[in-house]
Length: 133
Image (cartoon, rainbow, N blue to C red; front, side, top):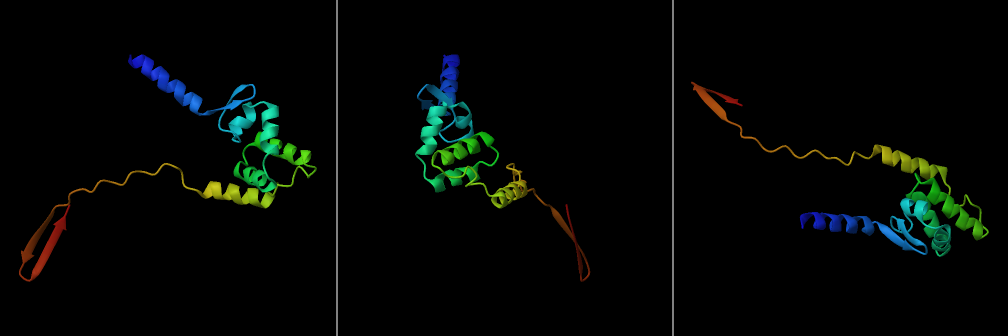
């Protein structure tokens, strides 16, 4: 019973990261780098042809590490009679790369648990000496 449950949950998890296409299923959600690599060319063309120019350029800047996605966007721009490099902006790419490099790692160490401190005081006349550990 437990084995069937594990298989069912695993299958659902895998399918949740997929998108239906005209020829079956592609990895990833529509428009993501994974989808751009696995979806049929006709579906990719239809997806990008349905987008406005600013939406194409926004996706271009969002995924600088995906040459396949950028190539598909460039193809869509050319089909519209526009230059393929319309969205290319080396300054924005440099800014994004710099921002990505300056971001802290996603791992944030947990806050240290408070520990008990014990102190002892000794009085010598008017002087008080306190020692904590």
